[in-house]
Amino acid sequence: MEKDKNKRVSQFKQIVSGYSNLVKSKLGLSSEEDEKIFQARREICNSCPERSAMDRCLVCGCPLAAKTRSLQTNCPKQNW
Image: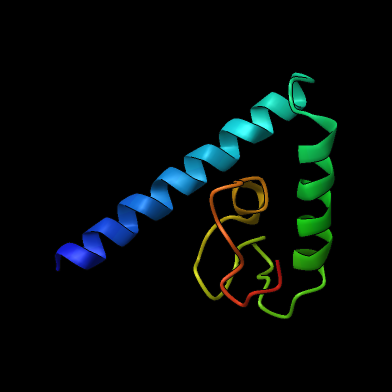
């Protein structure tokens, strides 16, 4: 039980980090290097068969807008 709780907390922190990076990007505060990483991840996810019509990862359930912008997470299918 504790392991599942820790996993959910970790996933939540990763999503928050991703949305935080999205806001930084919209405000022009993210680095060019980070933006290249985010863009490359997004391109991979856009062509992935595990991407839902609601723009979520069907493997982990994360919203891709956040997942691709969190530098603290990896693709569950090891695509990035």
